[in-house]
Length: 424
Image 1 (cartoon, rainbow, N blue to C red):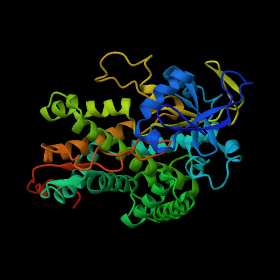
Image 2: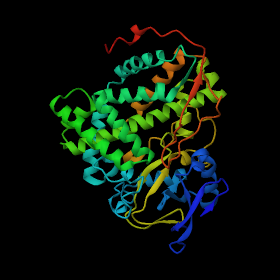
Image 3: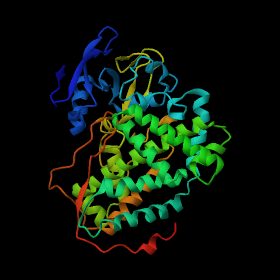
């Protein structure tokens, strides 16, 4: 085993790089704490050494190619014929106890399918997301946020992930899916285990049972929610298919949204360009969100495809049926496309592009912006609490996620609960 200059471990594994003959070389371990501590430094080193495509490991013994060049990523994401998202051939070679297998294995949903299956699933999930009333959602976020803020506003300090952001996004997703709290808690526990890669098999079991409980409930008690629309759509999804799409909404709606909000709050609290400007009104929280979506997107490395056959991209041979992972974070920071002021620029890859682009972009941004605005309106003098050091980042190959976000502020009287009477 060798170590790069940044301290990130690499492993000698087979790799097809520069030509089909060069089959041995180091891989950068994306799961290491060193990578999580400073991924952008590692991306820079990889770009200098390998160019737009770099050999990596997603987990011990699980090789992949990381796309760190913006133009190469755009080419791959717009070519589903040569780069399909179906992982079934790949996963046959992955050990059953691989910690990331439950997160990446095939499921009957659009993000893991091609051809007619993809069209059928994509139509159903897009239609269900489009039924969410964005105007009404403003009020829902406010109704959830105010009691949460009131729970800690008199204390003068808080840990925002556990006390504000997580419970807020958790309840918002439950609302959109029409899910009772008890089932939602089971879903959250299973999803967390999958994303952390800790006891992933048990997490997958918990998640599957909880999702089927929700699907069964909504079959007998349909409502105006994403789950019910999935069940009623003309694509005629069965219960298993519906449960997997609901699982995806939970996974992205909680984990992605939580990281988007907390990463943006960290920028606002630590970067004078945004902290002073957002609180002073010259820049909006949406500007800060766009900055984060460029620099530290909550899903840093994902959008995984599996080439049907060996294919040459930018002088690199990509092997058939092996993961090609788009690094949204690295591509967004590719010097070839990072020029000038980014304010208002939304050409990043945080949502993906092409046929698998996220269909819930507007929804996610609205929730994040409203959650941030509610907090800053209530506690305008909030500051990052660094009494125990700077915030730490959670290790993992896919996410860009803080372990905690402690803050301090002058104690404030609780907000008027009449503002949150709509849901009563």
